[in-house]
Length: 140
Image 1 (cartoon, helix red, strand yellow):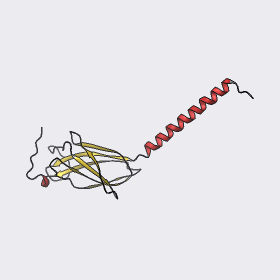
Image 2 (cartoon, one colour):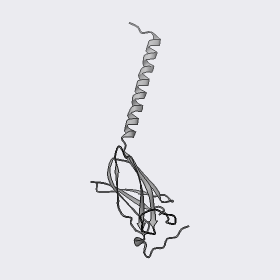
Image 3 (cartoon, helix red, strand yellow):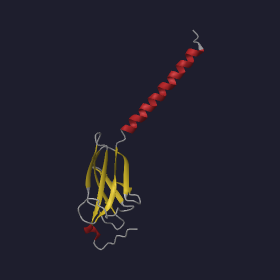
Image 4 (cartoon, one colour):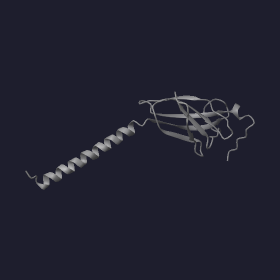
């Protein structure tokens, strides 16, 4: 039996749409399962209260360490010129995060949990004034 050209064309178009919709659904599912992100800033905590305040400068180009619980090596990201950072596509789990400035001064560690409910977290990482004794901070 020979099929009319119009029926064959409709069947081919439906097959193409089915493949395209399936690929789009698969891509959306992979993106949704890619995990979360951690963003924030690194700043010099001049008054020692752990909170970013007016007059406490951010740390440009700080190095941020993000270590997932149970893993040996941390992910390392850099802050931008304004002291802000983002780490994307992180697997869900518990992370320890800390920062280091250019003079090897460290912030304290903070724990962050990323899961399906809380897939994003914002963290401010203070480098305390105790670590800054003898260091000069120049704001330009």
